[in-house]
Length: 209
Image (cartoon, rainbow, N blue to C red; front, side, top):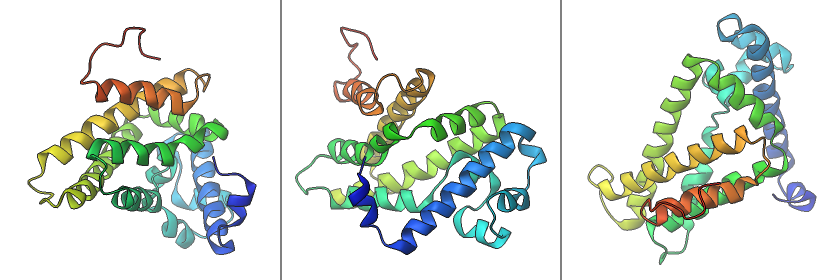
C-alpha cells in the first residue's frame, strides 16, 4: 500500500472526495448491519455521514452501491491501468497486474472490507446487486483488453473469457481471504488463485491457500 508520502501527493480535493466516499460507505454498512437494508434510506446514510442526499448521489447511484462499495472511479482507474500496461504484455498478465495494483492495498486496512463483505453476504438482494456490478466490471475490462488487442469488443470472446475467469478467481480469493480474517496476505491469496488459472486449472500439488 502507498505510504504517507504518496498519500500526501494526492491533491487535497481528491483526498476530501475519498474521505467523503469512505464516510458514506462506512455509514451505509453500519446502518444496514444494524437495521437491515429495507429499513435504511439514502437520507439515513447521508445524515449519518453528515452530508446532503444530493452529495450522496455524487458518489453512489444507490444505497446498495454504497453498501457493497461500488466505485465507478475505481473501475475507471482499473480500465486505465489495463490500457497503459506495456504493449508486449499478454491480456492475462496485463489484467493480473492491474488487479494486484488495485487490490493489494486492502491488506493494510481490511476491517472495513471484511465488515462490508459480511453484510453483503447476509442479504440476497445485496449479493445479486454485487454480481450485477461485477458483470459491469467484466464488460468494461474486457473492452479495455480488446482495445489493447485491436479487436472488436463485441466479437472478442478471448478477452471476455480472460476477464471472466480471472475475476471469478479473484472473487474466490477475496472471499477466502475474508473467511480467514486476513491471516494470509491478500496478495498471496490472489497469487495462489490466479496461478491456478494461469496453469490451465491444473490441480495444485500443495492445495490452494
